[in-house]
Image 1 (cartoon, one colour):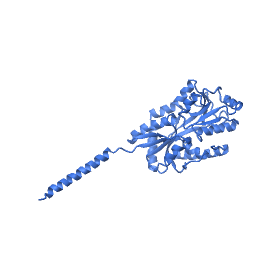
Image 2 (cartoon, helix red, strand yellow):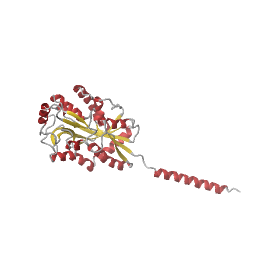
Image 3 (cartoon, rainbow, N blue to C red):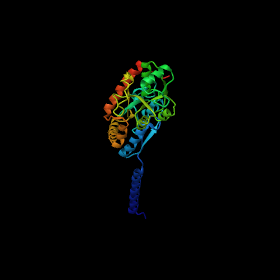
Image 4 (cartoon, rainbow, N blue to C red):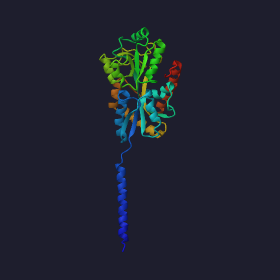
Length: 325
């Protein structure tokens, strides 16, 4: 004879166990990792800063945050990855040039203002014009004199075709009527060891601790800076504007971008967290010690800055008639 009370009890116990197992499984599930795409090679100021932010954001978000390097084409390969992500698990940390400059110079697979959404500005960085061991002069004037005396005798490395450094070089070449050969890289990390190895004569590189150390040691020669004014840490070095090249006197802005498909709420939350992390002394101090300037702000402020730089760079590129080969 069937014992209905016993059957009911067993069913209830089974349901409870099943529910407990479901809850346990959910509790054991790991949260999906967030990816920060760096559109340059490993190493260098962008990659190192992204990895420092990733460690702090992982704590704030209580989820893994990984950095993925996708270098090439002046940062545009990595930015296309982010533009096509269609999720809220992907960000880019980058110089703004793949959004505001490179699309004016070459064809892109993404619309910079429609497929990418600014999230947070982090800092802007002075650009150093430095000579490596192969450069025999000491000043910016020496560089121009050598370039005029020996056309194609000087070579200058930048972070890539369509990068800010590329634009700065074209401005100098055009205004000075010289022909310093462009040597594009996939980012700045490999440029420094290659400069020391004599692979090229000059480079345009962002301020960083290692670069500052090499300048102090005399292994690199600082000829000029792209900066609104002389740097307190380098008061004897003139800006490119002072030297008569105001159109080449540029700085690099660095910040976070998300896919345009991400929600305003997601971008606002990430902006608040990124600003919080950027204000932490162990994040900001190494950057400011290397002569970078922190530039926190809202999503709206960064968006307005990106849109303005996009419009301004378009005019500069058109006037200079800069195009890729």
